[in-house]
Image 1: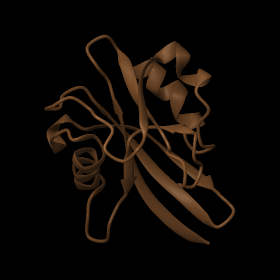
Image 2: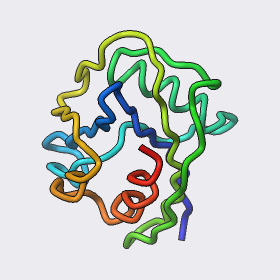
Image 3: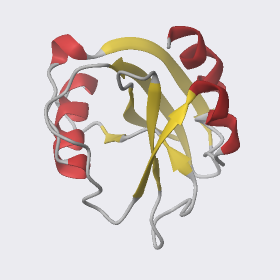
Image 4: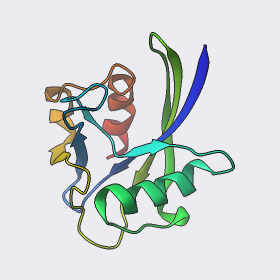
Length: 132
């Protein structure tokens, strides 16, 4: 089974809310909510992938020094195994705006479980709640 490396980030605003993005129609797992991020390309670090993905998906800028490793997910789907480090970020430039048809929501930690997520993301919530 192929292992896919995906980096994700919990953007945390000044009020302690976390940004979730809803996967748009036409994508795998459409309608589910997830932490922003994406696949790590060959030769790319997870931090570099997040910086690139946040710019592409949300139009914001951040820096490696603002990405704090928090936890990770290791989950087998039917056709691949997902390895996903989750970083926390409290500093970025710009206002997150959906650039790829996704819906965004700022969510308090105690309400993260109210949003249906991919199976790999669900175990990340307890560690994130402790951090925010």
